[in-house]
Every structure is written in C-alpha cells, then in structure tokens.
Image (cartoon, rainbow over all chains, first blue to last red; front, side, top):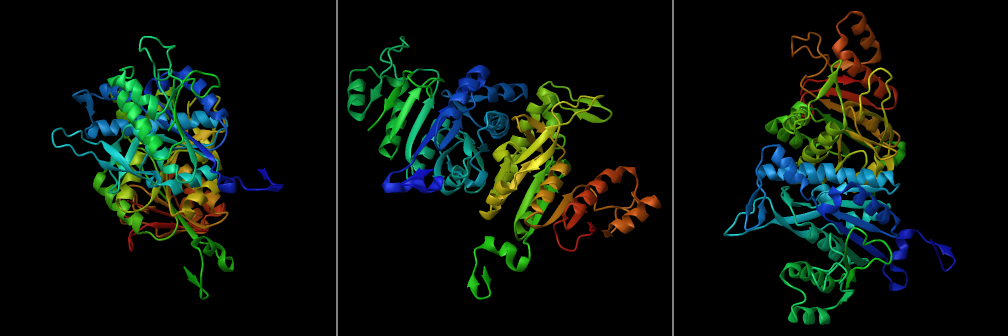
Length: 276
Length: 276
C-alpha cells in the first residue's frame, strides 16, 4: 500500500493521520443459508467487498431438522427455544460444524481465505449463561467479552473470521447465542480500533413503511426520525427489538448499520441505513 | 524467558544457538474420544505438557451412529468406508463440529487456550481427492500441503491448534482424511522449523511382541531392529501400515514417534518409542 510515496504494511494504514481503517461485519440469517443459489450469490458479493471483514451466520431450520431426525424434540416456551444438552449438541454439529465449515470452504473456493470460529476458539467470544428465575432457557448465553486481539491477528493475515452463533463461558461451556447479538457485540468491540459498519442481511429489503409493500423501504434512520416513526406507529412491535439493537450498536461506537436482503452488499440496492 | 541475562520473547528462543524448540503433536483415536472419563484424564495430561503442542483427533463411531440415526447407510467396500455427499456432511457435523468444538471447550475449561480447525480454516491442510480407477472412495483425500506459517502464528500466541481429520482441496472441497496421516503430515511439515515429536494414543500400550500379552511392549524400535522383527515375524500384517507411516515420518525429519494408550503422556508409562 502506497502512502506519501512510501510502501506501508497494510496494518500500519489503520491509524494514519488518526484515521481508522473501516471494518465491515456482515450477519446472514438462516433462510439465506438454506438457499444454495442465494448463498452462493451472496458469497460472491462478500468476496468482492474490499478491506477487512467478518462474517457471522445463524443456523435457521437445519438444526431443528437434524434434531428431529435424531429423535430430539425442540422444546419451546413462549415462542423461545429451550436449549437442552441434546439441542446444544445438535447446534454444535450443525452451526459449528456443517454450516460453518461449508461456508469457509465455499469462501476458499472463491479464493477468499477464511477461518471458521465458535466462541471457544481462541476464547474469542466469552459469554455468561442467561439466568432467568421463571424459565430455564438451558444452554443459552449472552456475550460479555470479545477477544479483539485475536480477531485482529487474523485480519492482519487477511483471513476472514466466520462466526457461528455459539459462545463459550469462561469455564468452557458452549452456549447457544443470538446471532444478531453476536454480530453487534463483535462490531462494537472492534470499534475500539476500527471505524466499523454492521450489515444485517435477512429476508426484508430493510425497514418498511408499509409491511405489506416491499418497496416502501425507509432509506435512512437516525435517532430523530426513529422516535417520530415510533410515535406515528409506522415502526411497530415486530421491528422494535431489532432496531433497538441497531441503535445500541450506534450508541456504542459503530458508524452505521445497514439492513437489507441477500443483495444488501450489491451496489444500488435499496436498503435501510441507520446512523446516529 | 531469560537467556544470557536478557529477556527474550518466547519466539526468539526457537533458534538460539541453532537449537530448535521442541513441538509435540499428539493424535487421539476414536475410542479415546468416546470415553468421557478417559478423554478428560488424557486432556489433563495434555494440558500439563510443556511447550508448543498440537492435537489431532479422529472421530470413531459417533459419525456412523449419527449417520444411522439420520437414515444414511454407511457404505463399505473391502472394509473401507465410502464417503458419499451425505457421509461427508455427517463427518463435517460430527468431527468438525461436535467433537472438535467439545475438545476445544474442554481444553478452555482447563485454562489451555486452543482453536479448532479443519483443513479449510486458514487453508491449513490442502489435500488432493484420492483417485482410484477401480473403486471411487468418494470424498476422501490425502494431504499435499500444510500451511506451517498459519500454524506457527497460532503457536506463537500460545494457542493449541486442534485438528479434526478433515482436509480441503485447493478448490474448496472438504474431504475426509485419515487421522494418522493428518498427524504425521503436520509433524513432518513443522519439522522445518521445530524439533518434532509425534505421539499416537490408541487402545494398545505400544507395539507388542505378543499380541495376546498387553505387557509385551517393545520399548524402542529403530530401522535396524524393525527389519529384524519383521523378518522374524514378530511384527505382523496388522501393525505394518502404521509402523511404515511412523518410519516415513522419521525419515522425513521427525525426531521420534511414540505409540501408546490413553496414558501415553503420563510419565513412566510403558510405550514404544520409534527413532531413526
């Protein structure tokens, strides 16, 4: 990399003139992963994206499908999955093994060096088991620490970290973890040394003015118009936790959050951009 | 680390006075992994072991069990498993996910930093699909390249690489790979910069003079007495491929190979040591 006439190692560039290098963290959901053609097209876009980047993936229905075939019933309370020991084993197999390694191999096929990680690997995502007096959710946890030095050592080697949504307690217990939160916690933590952007790819093209109309995407949200849209009930219950999570990321150092569908990384595709 | 009165970073120590630092590579088989108490005791010994180290694990019957429950039949030809697409998916789930991540989490629980890897991660084990005109073994490959720089970057951070026996072609295809060969190929490759030792932990205490007598362990084998023992038919067919593999490692730069059971890493336990 050439700067002021001299060659700099890529790594030094990050802090030149106090400017931070941009790191992009992309989260893909279960439905995208289940559609082979869509996933392949997404990965082409992801590989094209310049600069340091991180991929986080959910698991979707594959774990439920495998659990069912293995004879384990998925227990739900109030619409939330209860992760017992057998479920956690299936999640480790499907998210941490099959999906994670297939995505890494898929990126390698496209000449993008990558590495698959769960929270236990290099103690990269340390979590705390979720305590709830009324319902025991089982092997479920929330991220309390991100090992940014380890992530940075991979980025410096131009290796893309690919995270499954599995974290690990300090005592070495694997825990099922919300994929959106994994992505936001990583991005927030990395904001210490990078200018960070967070991309959520799901089924919707972004935040919609009219839930029935896929073309009613709200282009930009900031804390001002966000409040107005809640007050005027344009943004309703279903979207609130996700957007709360996005604004939380913004308030903790993330520059921008982008919401869109599988084509979010392509240019000139409608999406919602969330800023301060 | 103190040397000649000055503090040296650990990494510099490796080449002081031309002496190479010792790297230990340990392979554990399927049966050890299946026995929780035995695995736990082995991991205590492994964590105790000083200096840079690498763990390689097989998978044993767990993959066959899971495949059976998922309704996939394991196809065998001449006693060899045929790895079709579904089998490879199960292997990726069970070896690359469940077993690999459980071992990593188990090591973290014992305060040993570790990372789980398959060949696709960081392009660490590149293989070639096995070609056979008579039988198509399917998704099976042999290691042709080990990314020693990447392994070294982990060892320098005091992170133990934990390998499942899955490699990856240059084109990004995951392949089932013989665990013993994975261990020996890694050890051979790392001999470039380290003095290396290879440990195979299986059910037997070592090479036996009398297959019926577990206490008849041959303490040391070198290329001289190895030939004699073959000539006198003390070493027979069953053991020949494994020992051939060991002497191949020795001839390609590995200092010593140790064969023993789950207690191999304990002191004063009978085992077979193979040297030049």
